[in-house]
Image 1 (cartoon, rainbow, N blue to C red):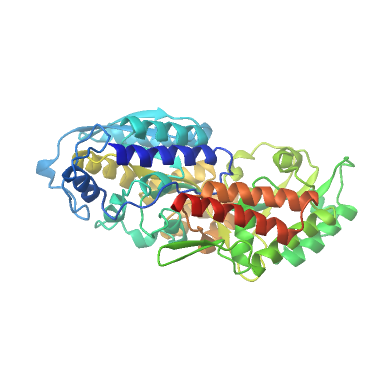
Image 2: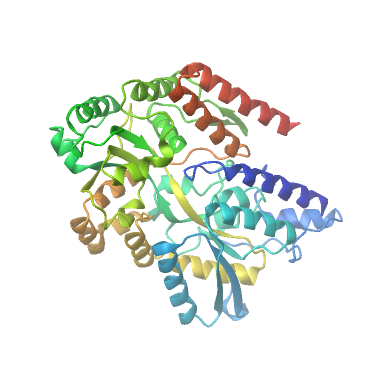
Length: 467
């Protein structure tokens, strides 16, 4: 009991850090306990320890093969979900359709709050053995991975699932830092560069040939500052971003910096490398030129929708939300430094239960949601992105793009979407990066000093936790 309780307490503390980080990150709060959660549970039992949950330790099972249908029994799954609005409605619609069509599986659906609330509730539930069987949540691998629960790595190998149809970068988003899959994608997003068509037209910018590099983007923003304030509003700026860390890490990867590296199981933060410093210096130049305001990011969306901002970087899910607004909105692929790359965000599906019967039921549910027609329906209804490459060849996608040209941009970015390495102190790293960018914007620290200080604070915590 002590071993698991200590691990889960560490998990809860890490999630508290997550509450203050941006949604584009994926913290992973505890060390990996092994590659097979059942083997770990059996080992703990052999040592005279209990798992700390309501389920007894179970023998190892080969989950790459489905259970014999004759051995299946009806199961009721507790399912928590962290999506609301249109996304929540579509998820519950699909879940209800699955429930009504299946005799072996019944679902108890519970809205668990937003991303942060759900992370906190799941952490607390794991401590008391009251966790759900299945959860749709942000940062899922930080929970299953930290518990050594890699059942999903076996399940996705089952015949008929077609794991290879899902984008490789999206699979990276579903892995723990040891490289093993412990979640499946559902409700994935990328950052997208949106723009106000009227402002760009007034500035004389031909957006049929949009800026491709950040250098070109800088010049276009200067044109917007000079001639683009079509509404004559105070505080007009050319560019902003709602989640600074999400964009900064995308830009780092574009410039050849992976943010963190893993060699022989050792995690090394590298976001103060020369390549990252170039990104930070560019970031500072945006503020120095008046292109971006200093530390005004919380107001970015409202400012953009008010017509007082030419460009904004926000989640791809805004495509479905901004359907009834007072401005004309377009989107372009994210500008880049050396190579195209955008960091993934969004939600995943995880299985917590260790009961073989419930695992079969959970996998039935998940495979239903990940069928191309179901996943595409969810994506086009919510603004989240399809996860299967085959979905982009469908008539539904062609029709969606014809109705909303911005979908083409988001879908194309999937081919170079990327997920950065996830580890225990990820929440701290995101806090430190955000703080460094704020200091750079305000001019209280030079870029190199800000990045060095942020990295050193992170390394200090990592070394302390390793003791």
